[in-house]
Amino acid sequence: MVRLSMCASGKYSSRGPALIPRMKTKHRIYYITLFSVVLLGLIATGMFQFWPHSIESTADWGLDRRSVHDAPLIRLPVANPIPERGDLSCRMHTCFDVYRCGYNPKNRIKVYIYPLQRFVDEVGVPISSTGLSREYNDLLSAISDSEFYTDDVTRACLFVPSIDVLNQNSLRIRETAQALAMLPRWDKGMNHLLFNMLPGGPPDYNTALDVPRDRALLAGGGFSTWTYRQGYDVSIPVYSPLSADVELPERQPGPRRYFILSSQTAIHREYRAELERLKEENGEALLLLDKCSNLSQGVASARKRCYKGQVFDYPQILQESSFCVVLRGARLGQATLSDVLQAGCVPVILADSYILPFSEVLDWKRASVVIPEEKLPEMYTILKSIPHRQVEEMQRQARWFWDAYFSSMKAIGMTTLQIINDRIYPYAARTYEQWNNPPLVKWSSVNSPLFLPLIPPRSPGFTAVVLTYDRIESLFRVITEISKVPSLAKLLVVWNNQNKSPPEGEKKFKCPECTAIDGLSLDQTHMVERSECINKFASVFGTMPLKVVEHRADPVLYKDDFPEKLKSFPNIGSL
Image (cartoon, rainbow, N blue to C red; front, side, top):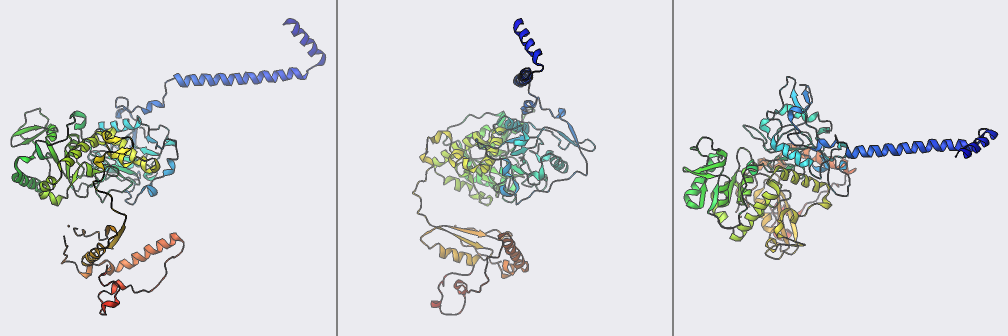
């Protein structure tokens, strides 16, 4: 080594600063730099693997870790903006940015949960009297533990605020709306999802959350046909707290001690009177329960029901009946529905205009009986006409609906997200069978014959669509004639008068109060609105595709005084 060094030194000194030594110096610096980069990379990797992750800690939504008192305090100035009331015209293609979701191999949306904050007004009063409820904490925990969750806000397709709006009774409406508007990604509610189970308040009890929410999607527990935005909102059940406290073992389907049971305590006096009349007519087949007034001190009244001094355990008593009545209360959505399903009792739902939970994907005809409120006096007769075997299948389906979709806040939350996921990735959506067939009746690729049609399908035919406003007599005349066509498969009547209910169909409807003065075409503003609508279409289309023609269609001549032989359609009246 010494001799080589000396040789090199002698060579170096005789030629001065030669090229070779300079190259070695460059190589040495290069290798030292490369080694340093590799070493730093290894150290960083080790630290990432073994150092506690501060980011991952946000995924723990346990109540012990995520106390409201430890959250940062945010004051809401009085002048803070308030979102708009809520756009009833919102649909997925107008108020939801699907491009945020993008394509991914798993066809699964990513959901981001905002960090918890304490919102108070300028004098320090909280926006909610209860803070974060146990139910909402369970919901957020379920989302954060699911495959939908992401802690990377830039990857999120859907945003869930940590502001608890499950129960409107505990909220300050204006301040809650201001808190929502302050969320950093709010953007008029675009791609935001709110969960609410108890909407409205006295005296009107609106069927949707009263908090102004811009374009946010609403998973609501009491929608009516007037407030539900089809294909945008999600109708969810009202969670029953008894689900976590009471375990009801699944009971085999079949006849029960009682045929009909009513267990609700706060129902309208007219409904109560009608149920009492049914009780008098049908005796022991119907059990009509009410709240207890003679309980011992310390006994939870929510867990007891009474009939003439006899005390029953609730919800256990529900398992003793084939059918259980679910009537509308002050709110359309009732937690009783969840209790009934858990008991394997077939719910008899009397709540006009109520959007049943998850009705977008669940076939409620297989698990319940829906009866118009005006048909309550005929309830016993209607239920008696259902075959025993069908009742047993409905009992089994009711219990399975509860197990799969109602049993916990996790089940409710995951079902909601899956429905939204199916809208965004329809090509990978669950099938009807996957949503509605219990595991016991799923055979490889064949469905249970119990759910197959009992008769062969009808031959293909055409569907007739009849538009009408208020001309009842002409409507029935048209329906009568069209129904004679052999190839008719279905007849759909579109009733355009929103101020009057359509006539009932099994009987002839008479309308003595109908006059010519309330016709749509006689409204002076009708032609103006119709012209504006046509012009709007023309502007979007780029040109006016319609041509002005004058043509006298023969069917409108049915009243003209000229020979019948000249009328091609003498039996068709005016629409």
